[in-house]
Amino acid sequence: MTSLSSGKLCFLPYCLVIFMYVSSPNWVAFPSATSTSDTEAKALLKWKASLFPNKALNHLTWYPPTHNINATNSSNTNPKPRTSPCTWTGVSCNSAGSVSTINLSTCGIQGTLHEFSFLSFPNLEYLDLSFNKLFDAIPAQINYVSKLHYLDISINQLSGRIPPEISLLRNLTYLGLYKNTLLGEIPNEIGNLKSLVGLYLQKNQLHGSIPRSLGNLTSLTHLYLYDNKLSGLIPKEIGNLKSLVILDLSANNLSGLIPLNIGNLINLNILYLYSNQLFGLIPKEIGSLKSLMDLELSYNNLSGLIPPNIGNLIKLNTLYLHSNQLSDLIPKEIGNLKSLVDLELSYNNVNGLIPPNIGNLIKLNTLYLHSNQLSGLIPKEIGNLKSLVDLELSLNNLSGLIPPNIGNLIKLNTLYLHSNQLSGLIPKEIGNLKSLVDLELGENQLNDSIPASFANLSNLDILILRNNQLSGSIPQELENLKNLTKLYLDTNQLSGYLPPNI
Image (cartoon, rainbow, N blue to C red):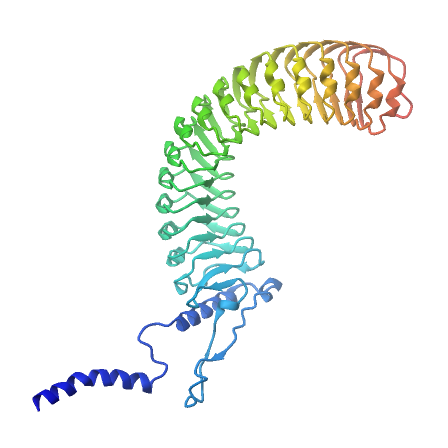
């Protein structure tokens, strides 16, 4: 009897559970995927209702279908309709039917994120709301989407500060907040996002210093902080980011020296530090960045010489050192940079000769050495640069003849040799440069006549020969220059008349 009673007592809880399940078909012990899906759908619809009504909003097909989840149960005559957002515009779900991706980029939606219930999306991994018209602050509640690995809310009109709570999204690999009107400092806590591969904060109104904690983000390959109001030093901890491929700190108010350990970033392809207030020397350690393809340090206050080991950067396509206070010689090692397409050293205090081995740079399209203190001859090797489109050597102290083989540069659109001490004849070979649009040889000591071959320059728009020692008659062949809009021949010893149709 005792054993029978014990058996019944042991069996009773099990029976109770079965009875509850059979009598209540909607009962579940744990939250189901369906209930999560319902919560997500309601959250999306609530957010949609808060957005400004416009044509773009009409394209969001968030009109939930209903289905009878109890269709097989004939005893239920009033089934409760369920919603699933998994087929809605810009929404994708995981295998359990919970929202994992929201991609509403370029949808033209307008409104705020205040009614976006981040807490309602426990499985959200990918959120892209970029290229819209979202405004006001980024809610601190954004940290509730803890599984998020991709967050892009760039190119909107978001304002206020970057919430420090964003640093709790420890799975983030991509964070795009660029091209908004965010202000304040970059939160120090962002250094906790150690999975980040791409950090894009450019084109905002962020101020203060670059947090040293960014040096913790050792997985970063892309760091964009340009076009803000950042100030102070470039932190030496940047040198820890050895996976970086692109580092862009340009167009800020950064000051001080370029840190020496920037030479640790051996995977860098692009280094942009231009348009700041950096001073001191270009560190020789930059010569270690042998993967660099684009180096732009212009519009700063850098001084001293151009380090010779810049010649190690043989993958460089673009080298901009212009608009600084660099001095001394152009290092001959620059002739090693045979991949260069664009070389700009203008607006400095560089002196001495143009190195002849600049003629090795046969891929150059643009060569700007103007506004320096260069002297001596224009090297004849410049005639090897047959890809040149723009050659500007003006505002220097160059002397001697214009080399005749400059006529080899048949792709030239612009040739500026003005404001030097060049002498002798204008070579007739300049008439071979049939792509020339702008030819400026004024403010020199050129003599003799204007070559009749100038008549071949049928694309010429601007011709400036003023302030030389040219003599003889103005060639009537200039009447062939049908596209000419500016012609300056004054302060010479020319005679005759201009062709009537000029």
